[in-house]
Image 1 (cartoon, rainbow, N blue to C red):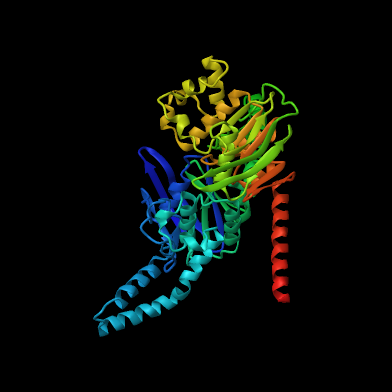
Image 2 (cartoon, rainbow, N blue to C red):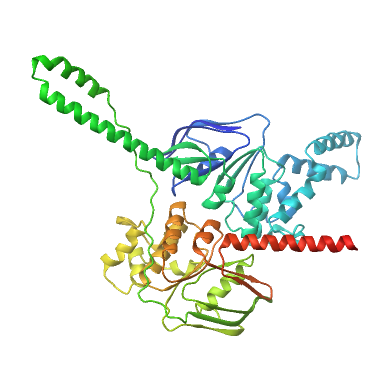
Length: 544
């Protein structure tokens, strides 16, 4: 168990947390949620001991081991992948290294022998003999091939490093597991594996995530940060949302009844306070009136942007034709004779583990990259707005937000432009911020403003939910559901894909799989196909 007792954290004059008291118990998975800036990641750092609170204390049951997901992707570059995972249990790793040093000695003394014997006993108690196998199992589950297990961390790419650090956090069955955005940069297969791992994990988990489907799947309780306090709700994310909305509704209804009672008492007092025969009743009602207190209903600190894509013209029957697109990058063929036709009602999710292939396809379709072979053709009635995965170049200038958006607006009026910024929560002085100092989430909201103001009838998104908070993801999700044009997009947010797409395209070696279906149906059919394949292989082995 881990608990916070009267924890307060002040940053300058602002209290990020004020006298927080909360217990996280074994067997539960807690989703830590709250608006951007509410302090979710900061609270995890306080729980893990990386950050000291201004007041109060964190108490962990004696003997329990806490593990957390490291955020520094370069910290272990000088270590081997397997060693990095085993470092998740520091004591076990230290024992392994001390043993190696003792056994490497040429003048092995009696004292060394006694020390080695003690280390071997502790090593066995910590399941040290299974350490490499357990680490390999975690890595394989997350999609890190065995051939990478003995490489240096510095040789891995960014998404591979994220998976290794996640395996490190999960290693050795920690008593308390803290995960800050564990699904970021994971492919959908790795996310599915992690969901199953956490569902079957018997100890305490506290996780911050913007993935609603992920939270619904794994969480038994929700810890909601709002107004410097943390409130616990039983159930998953959807249950929290319904419960919190119901609570506010009940408080409003209770206040309405109280207000009606107050009005009734005030009218009686006003009518009969001067009447001698009614003076006692009037006095009694005054006392009753003084006892009625309205519940304080604070509006949530959460803010939802208003996302509404309105195409300027309707799309004709010819939208997009792709024929035999092929592209090789650094000697690897990422697109291999890709062909498909897009219809006017298509909302296509590009899925699959090859992130580079999907991004390359988007860049070719938007004219940012030339294919080695093949062609594509947009219909004459189409207009495109594009959300790139890497937006660095978009904001590599000294423009303020309003001027940055004006350059893309068909109407150069500042009031018109600021209207779009206001919808995306850039109000007042925010409009004069320079774009090169914006946070990741602010840059995403700027790009969405740019896409809205374009009036395009085809939207292309390469991972738009990265860096967005839950409220912005929900707003974008709703905006795309009601968008009347064509969408091509990638996302690791399961719910986002399921509720938006009506067609799934998976880029695979040698081509693609193209299905008119929902995402859940696609996954179900894919799982059945895998099971059939395993059954066939096992049957053939049995016949041999």
